[in-house]
Length: 202
Image (cartoon, rainbow, N blue to C red; front, side):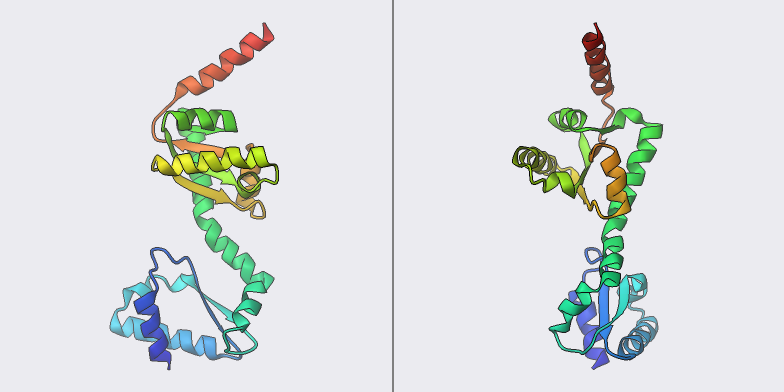
């Protein structure tokens, strides 16, 4: 039985795409299975399993039936761990943005006007946006951000939608909720903003 599951894991799970694997059971079956699987993986040199050991998350379920999946996924402890796995990519993107802001500020912009200007020049390499804006209840706001996201994707950019419930989403929210890492420097964006502010003061 364990071997059949292991073969299923090896055959059907692409670890380049899958961020975590939930292993749920009543009692200690999940621990016994994972111990056996990792032993076999070392013995048979199944790198797909040994190199992705951290992606296996062990959780308790009341039975082995399919319907308990819903119960497992509703567990707050599980959803928090899944959110952290999903958010790992977002956290990395935000770290890259902050680093860029320090080292190459002409390639890191935040605020919808700046980001839209960069996108018009097909300069956005990575777009960071909060789910609050992307799924806004205000229709014009939502349309604006959906259009931006689709445009960045069409131009070959990477889009990261941040959960406002995660700390990384909160951080991005403090930066207006939208930011971009650019493919090339665009100092003109900042200069235009400065000149606009000066003309307003005049």
